Amino acid sequence: MAAALAAARAGWEVRLFERAPVFAEVGAGVQLGPNAVRCLQAWGLDAALRAVAAFPAQLQVRSALSAQVLASLPLGQRAQQRYGAPYVTIHRADLHGLLAQAVQELPAVQQSLGCPIVRHEDTGGAVLVRLARGKDIEGDVLIGADGLHSRTRAQLLGDGPPRFTGHLAYRALVPLQALPAPWRAAQVTAWLGPRLHAVHYPVRSGAWVNLVVIVHGPAPQDLEHWDHAANAAGLEQALGGTHPALQELVRSVAATGGQWRLWPLCDRAPLARADDMARGLVALLGDAAHPMPPYLAQGAGMAIEDAMQLQTALAMHDLEVPLRLRRYALNRWQRAARVQARSQRNGRIFHATGPLRWARDAALRLLGPRLLDLPWLYRA
Image (cartoon, rainbow, N blue to C red; front, side, top):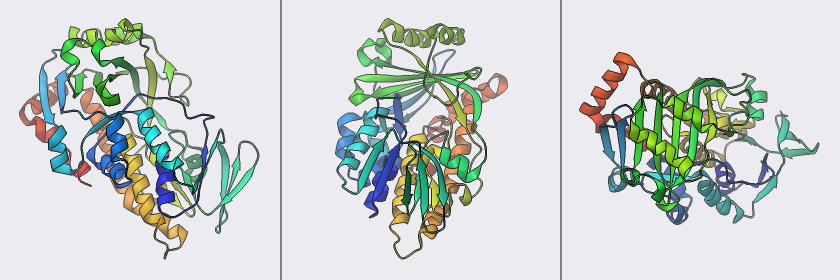
């Protein structure tokens, strides 16, 4: 949706082909750093964002074993002053909704639901796409923003399926007032433990809390569908040995009638070159280009940044189209690769055991704000 908005704002007529038959309310929470929020603001979406998002006052890191605070980083006004935009937490459906509303207001965008693209052909002068319905469509450019299991990527790069990380994410939404009183603060809280971690933060203007617990485990048979029913008993077993406060927090989901969903985490190696993002008249965007685990909370942010850079490139009307896409890729691949690599590294640190865990906790106690703040990421 961000890609369609960006291309239309660059002066292009856009045909948006969506695989799903309807835009459903899927997913849970999303964290958006100031780098991504500035893009939304540039598209004139600041008021829409403020109407539905939450603005946490701080990031707090705790031990999942002792519940002791290891480090804190002020967000709120500090993020606004330091990076020119706030740190935002938002329900995925609300983020999609404000982008969709912006797209619907643009007559240059035509949307077709339930129309997955089966294959494409770059003829050098145009791109031909075959829809699952058997219809052929011709266009000047194809932007593959079709997610982790991208068919566009499969044909463009032929690099096989994404890899399962060995981590499983359990996620749920809980009304704020249903949480134990100590956890109703307007903040992002991360709990780090051996081979697991948990994160919770407010969404929907603070009325709800998104709770995610990531543990090590075997892959479900079906990796193509990221949303699976989850067994709460299995999650509670995985949390055995963690602090009672964290376990109480997790049990609040069932106590309020909520349900856990399971998300097997997959990724790819960091991008190695610009050709991994664009070739000829075809380019990749978001998870289709650089899927990453959520340990830097930048999956959505990188897709939004991609779209903003795509807008800049497509608006270079004095360049041939392949050169515009090449410019897009050159301006994106190294940054996206760095974020991918840091996300993967964070996963190893978050779930550390033994001496590495002790060293991590000691470093957080000593250098917390310096380790948690990311000016290289938020200022770009």
